[in-house]
Amino acid sequence: MLQPRGRDPQAITSAPLLGLGAAVTGAVRLVDCEAGAGPGSCNGATGDSAKAREAAAGAMAAPSPGPREALALSPEAGQRAATSNSSHRRGLFWRLRDKQTRLGLFEIGPRHELHGLASMMQAGLWAATQASIDHPPTPSDFSSELTSPKKPFLACCSQAPSPSFRAISLCWDRTGFRWPTCDRGHVPGLSSEPGAADPAGLPTQEDFSEVLTQVHEGFELGTLAGPAFARLRRSLGVAEEDYQAALGPGGPYLQFLSTSKSKASFFLSHDQRFFLKTQRRREVQVLLAHLPRYVQHLQRHPHSLLARLLGVHSLRVAQGKKKYFIIMQSVFYPAGRISERYDIKGCEVSRWVEPAPEGSPLVLVLKDLNFQGKTMNLGPQRSWLLRQMELDTTFLQELRVLDYSLLMAFQRLHDDERGQSGSVIFLVARSVHGAQIPEEAGSQNRRLLPDGPNALHVLDGPEHRYFLGLVDLATVYGLRKRLEHLWKTLRYPGRTFSTVSPACYARRLCQWVEAHTE
Image (cartoon, rainbow, N blue to C red):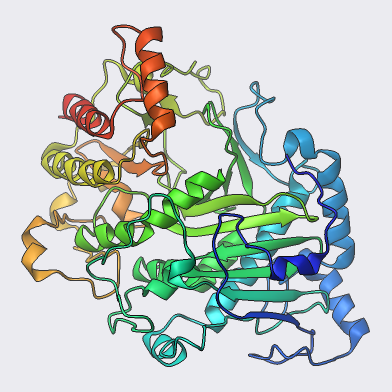
């Protein structure tokens, strides 16, 4: 729940940005970008103020943003959004647990209670992606900008249609991070020397530690480890322009209300290609601490089932408490012909969902007990899946992670789609551009990928197409989970539940997949 903090907006320049105990050791730049500023300008050059405000006022009305649109909400729109959200802040901001009777997908249109919030997210993400487009993390850029430790990298906004838009760019030294579970050892495949960018485009340590905060009228949006995620998106073939168009103001977000017991809120881009989920601060800590090893795992196993994480952001409205959310590729994409969806943890306690009535338009994600008596007929793809599950769950076990889910969905193949597995185009999908480890080529567990969208999460069996992916990778087996395990052992004797050791969790989920595939 947001609580206004009556403090000066400028105070952010000296306070720790995430409130995570991190030390800001780089420089801070605060600029006002006028509408008339040309590309690459961040000097606050003056322009026609009236024209700038007129352009900003119409930004959100445009169906698709141009290079000078939607970088920030207009003052009027920002005030309306902040006012609208503050009146519903207690029950509606990021938490909708009071709406258990409403399940499925809902378009966040102008009359939706979260329209103001969604508009802020869209405007903020459009601007953040534009900053990445204007300042791509190329090897030459980083080798020249980061060679000197006394010259921290500063990313800035190249254009802004509104004089009220400001950008604060912070560069944190690697030693400024104080993640409780962060492994600061050398990660193979990553550039370990400060300022040394890998010629293949691998992330540097500065890529993982950069934080960019863009201040809009009425809210501010932070981008964490932006260059690292930009490189990852590029390696996955996600063009920045497509990413910006899907997450920007070009179309309404979709809100997904599920039966999940978590307090997170879920959103989809208007084309359902990207999935947004709110996260707790400690979950963001875990994700960022594990990010270098996550990239390394995707490099070693390009066809991994792990969900592709594309961005981590923070959002603060009207000087309130900062909230965090992540962006990843949707496992269930394209969703047009999907008939069944499941969230599998390999246990039985609280793993039943009342199915929707036959013919109901509700989009429900069912659970383990709903899948009893069913199997996935994968044909020759089964051996690949079992091996990849072993590789991915072993990696998560090494990170001490548990409580993740295997998302599954089914789609019946058309007659002309069956029997094509032998003639599929082999797509060399990689987690990082140029990532090849010759000594591990035999252990990468590559497979033939279908020549279509979201190929990394799609397996074709004889009769069905299956969408598969491992999600929710931010729960660590610490003291809290150990105590929860002891309590559930007493509460549910003889029954299986999700809170077990990472080794047990990984082994049990792999056994579930083996028992339910053929």
